[in-house]
View 1: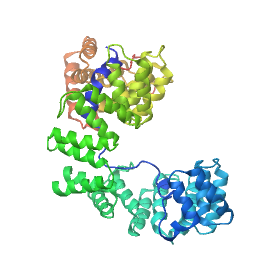
View 2 (view 1 turned 90 degrees about the vertical axis):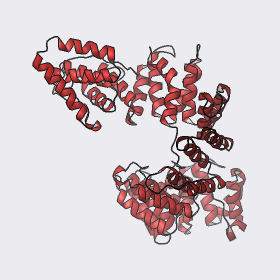
View 3 (view 1 turned 135 degrees about the horizontal axis):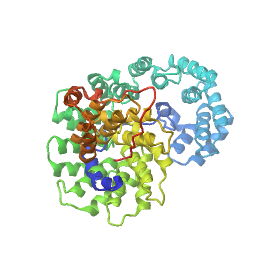
View 4 (view 1 turned 90 degrees about the horizontal axis):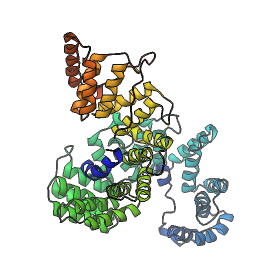
Length: 528
């Protein structure tokens, strides 16, 4: 059966089993942009000034009117108006986009000691990639940090974490700046510390679940709705802190009251997986869906499609998925693609559009499926180079089937330059995750001496493991072929190899050791 067909049959259940989303509300956009309080609504005395009114009009979405009001004020040197014009010129909202003009406005605003102009100017300079500009931006924001350690510390924290100031990430320095910002009362910096210790910024050696919870709690107590969701979900599910249903639900309700509708998602997840109360879970997901929370739409859709807590209703489920897809939910696009591919006469163009949207949304599973879609020739002809452009993205995310498929392309030299070494490395990564096809491929490599030395005993052990991982027919054939010339001693040694592999830690299983020169040419192909 073709891999795409297999996916169409199985994908919906796979997605449901994997779980849709993280329950923590979080914004993946740049902290530098967030920290710019860009076009926030002003209060107090500023709100009554002409520039303050222009800013509020801009924040309400009437950019051209706001620019019309701000421009003459900026020409007279009004700091807030200079900031408005800088942001409008940077983003092309209300006026023609012009990085040069934006920098000019921001510099004039910074010279007038306008904080937001300083933040934006420093952020742009530090992100420029030009050494002299990076240093200028660093000096500017560090000088501002002496006056305002809150927002400045938040920006510097990201700059050090991403390595824009040092050439490589400096997480300890980033944390020190975020702590200064948090101590100065900056709630977003407190939230960033929580996410950092929660492992959300790719620094696993710094993960500390207790510290993450403490910072989430601090931010929640200061009114941050996303942190309220994080605290609530941990009080309901985590082993890091003592579970407390009443407090957990209380925090989720506070988040919902603050219009953070991922609270419905977290509550639904708790009711579904901990309380096993499917009707109540569906009710929570439905409330979130009605409030426009796309992940809740997906969860509710799964319930209707599978008849969980309600009667099966494919129409309602599909309707919810379509609504979530219109909200750019990548998982909804992927599920719709799977539905279409499972139909007797699938609309391939429509399925492709959903797969592409899901892939662009960053879903590794979708990226792998899109690669397979191109290989299948469903669009008219097989497009191997297109497959070779999508498999690496999913493989980099750690998806075993994508690692296996990309390895097969390297093995065959299809769409990429042939490399048994790269193929062996990728097969190894996939096999370490239990992928049967990759395990069988490694067995072939060891039997033929491709990217490794010939080791038929180890090849036999890998092929036997591949049988257990679902590759029964092909692996059994390879085992039979290898055993033809085996002595009793070799068979005993092979069985010992299998015992050793099974005794190893998952991260150590099984590997292909590079040889100086490939001596065989096994043939592989994408199988999942």
